[in-house]
Amino acid sequence: MNTNFQKLLQEKQYLDKIILVGPYHYELFFELRNGYQIPLTITFSPLFPTQLPIVHINEKSHPIPNIPHVMSSGLVCFLDKEGVIWSNVPERTLDFVFERVEQVLMSNSPQIEFHREFTYYFGTLENTEPVFSVYTPGDEAEEISVLAMGGKPFAFLTDDMESKVLLGKLLNTNINSRNLEKAFYIPLDHIYEGKVPQLDKFWNNEEISNLIKNHVTEDTLSKIMNFSMNKKRYFYLIRIPLLTGDYAIIGLWYERVNDYLSKRVVPLLDNSVTGNFKVTPLFVFRNDNTTLIERGGGVQKSLKALLIGCGSVGSDLLFMLARSGIKQFTLIDNDKLEIENSYRHFLGMNKSIESKMKTKLLKEEFEHRYPNVQIQTIENEVLNVIENKKIDLNSFDLILVAIGDPNIERKLNKIILESSTPAIFTWVEAYGIGGHALVVNNGKRGCYECLIDNELRMYSSFAGKSDVPFIKNMNGCAGSFTPYGSIDSMQTALLASRLVLRFLNNNVKGNPLVSWKGCAEAFEENGFMTSDRYKQPTDFLNNDDYKYINNDCIVCSNLESEDSPNDQI
Image 1 (cartoon, rainbow, N blue to C red):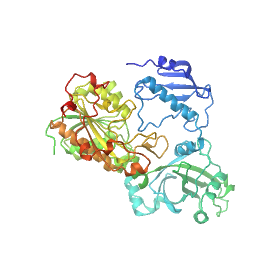
Image 2 (cartoon, rainbow, N blue to C red):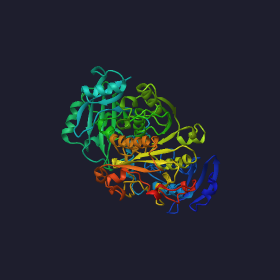
Image 3 (cartoon, rainbow, N blue to C red):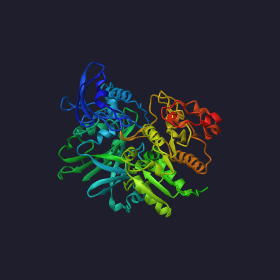
Image 4 (cartoon, rainbow, N blue to C red):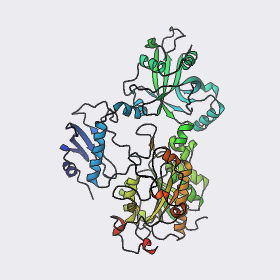
């Protein structure tokens, strides 16, 4: 049913002066709890509430404040939605959105919030240059190397054969000493409490000098002095401890513009070098070992499988099913393969450097490995694909859903149940505490919606209730991810693959939920608690579970009445 957005907005007492200015786009005033009214614009998605709206401060009527999570364009980053479930009721979702917007606009701890998004803000500097890094930052200052290409720094690395080989494989070229220049790595020893550079507000020479002098030991200062003598240009990689307890890694590139200046001048430490050196901030794309690791019987029937989601679980699932003899796949995914996730994606690091769509890379890889496999690809958001009738779900024998986004999965569940094709949803939980696979549309009651209760908690979850999302964040809003390893995604894909094979061999009754349980040590060390379901014996969790079925489910209870498998047990 289409949402009447004008009516929806007008029903909210905290909104006023609502004007439609374009399709799905409104101007309005939002009254904060302190009584202050701020002009905003809101742009809805046609898929609302499955997809959240975009909110800006209306810069025509109000200056853009310098506060965390508000961009220079006025965009309000009100939600890091990774792992968050919101209501599928439009009225409740709108309340949820404006509650989060208010939290951003009335933040009481702006400095720590700026630090939380340090990497993002640093990347907005006007004259920043991007640089790659396969160097693993440690606790000691040391001389390292930088690969220069086209007169610019391209990649930081350790000057050893292992790093050269690694970078060479990523770039498909040979790295030797002739390509390299010297650089210096500086880990600051004390927490930085100052301002975060952004837009046109980079540190000046005095601020940079004080940053280094006030946050390192005398021994480190001595090493910097010895490194920084008699060079035309200097490259530095700096690790900055932040108020959040995390670190930011940045780079600085000094290039001499005054050849008559004393060669003994150390630009990083000398306040008087203004005008004698050009200073360029370097935005570091970390792809070192620490970052990447933190981030990773056959079928005889002829059948067509639709795989929605080609990430870590989806790619492993494709690998296992292709090896099981399934030969016809259609893949739907709208993301490129990024190196940040290469440690937990089937295709690995060498493919990610190509910056191509996951679907295309998987097609190339699998059709090369298994010439008899036929793969069709669709590079788009799955809900858009279905809405625009780019595919017919009824034309497939089985649908596999491995996207790990419960909000989209709820919508998909409803659409799938309107088709004649059975499906298996599969997902992995944070820190590898477990994974799940669920059959739906297999002729009896039980569906994905049944898993979710009135408090938006999932029956299947091994994670206990928490007000803190089970995610990690390494590069600001854009760098959030659910922490788990490659073994966890493979185990989940294995669980789902076994369920697929059982289904194809007619050994699945109704719509069961199956789970595997992992170690909770890392999960609990990060301050989280497990659920009561996690405490169930492993053998019980591995067996088909029908207890989740909600006979009053708003989605599957309307299906043709059949005996529930739960009644048969």
